[in-house]
Image (cartoon, rainbow, N blue to C red; front, side):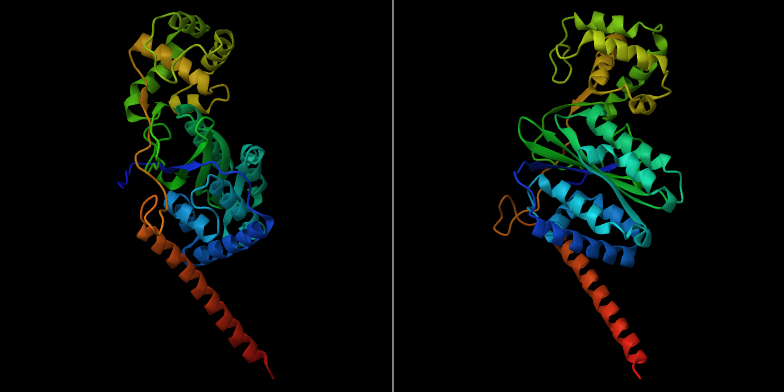
Length: 361
């Protein structure tokens, strides 16, 4: 395996869909163990270190194994994040680590979760809300790789540090792909945000955050100012009847010209200052991005990238070498974490014993 280091997102994992859910007796224990492990890490290294570990897809997968969940199931993402959210409830102020979001509606409620923690934050929650929305927008609009987001969890500190763990599902293959973000390493949401991407399956992806899409991003932003107000719709209608090379993700048959035209007009009226601003607009969705990329290709000669950002396989491995040998470094990290927790617990017991002995008559 080769680690690719650039700037922002710290990993992607492809995981098969498994039916069912964690039984109540297991999930209850998972929340308790997740709380104890997190407490040990925060006490030993601080809350920022926990964010960094959650942003590492290998460590996250190892945590799921330690908590007793299937290492290769898509459910490890939602279950581990759910166990952390439930387990840390009531301890956030003490630990300085907060959790928002989750699966489905819970994920869409992440901004509300952030605002609810406002009294414990030393910063304006608007920055965290923006980070939550942009990470979701990049992985669902700027990168269209066939995985529809259905889970979004955000872990953050009182001073505004954060990590996002989100997951999408491919309805055809029934595989999930998990995306990890670490806020402290972000330089640009829109140019090669991946620092480590893990995947067994690679294909074509409409990738506006690839470095080679730089000209496309600039052209898409420029066209909102270059064209007269209201003309983007007519430009898309002209493009849609051309004999374009058939490229996955850039076909016009599934785009309603009338509806997309209204959205294009609305986007143009807001005169975005750059691509990141354009991406953050509420009306700028997946089909709008594809429509504007088609126009940019024809008018400005700036084709978008179709490179899938997945770069290497991800799994924990098995003792008998299937699907491949266990990654010993990841396994050692798990052992180290548990060792830290045990040592911390022993120290607490010893201190408690000393206090009680002093209180005896």
